[in-house]
Length: 124
Image (cartoon, rainbow, N blue to C red; front, side, top):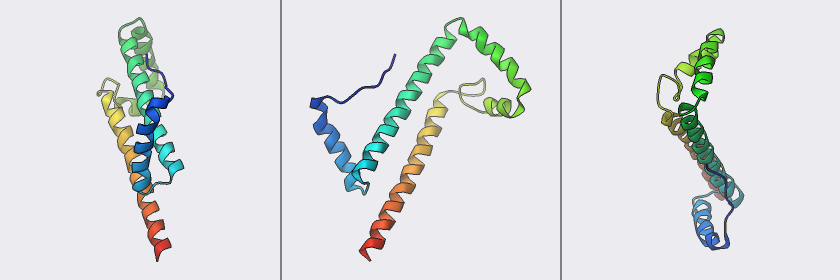
């Protein structure tokens, strides 16, 4: 089981150092913290889903999952999407994590570029 956590007093210097790196890279402190928390939430959510998948495979939920797959035929768009998504019969669940992480990183790169452009405009 994975659960969220809260920082301890002992962790505050490390958190400060980590956030300082983000701020030095051009992110405002509030955005830096928001992005760190977003990535943490994403990783935690993926870990929880991975654990649930292990549980589904090792329990009677496998029958329920097989029945659900049969029902998808009535929903062609959902069925087509499910066939190409990791975690289905078509591929490993880890690809979902990698795709999600790539999407988050792309958004972060775009935001960073915006911040740098704003800083450059303000300087000229």
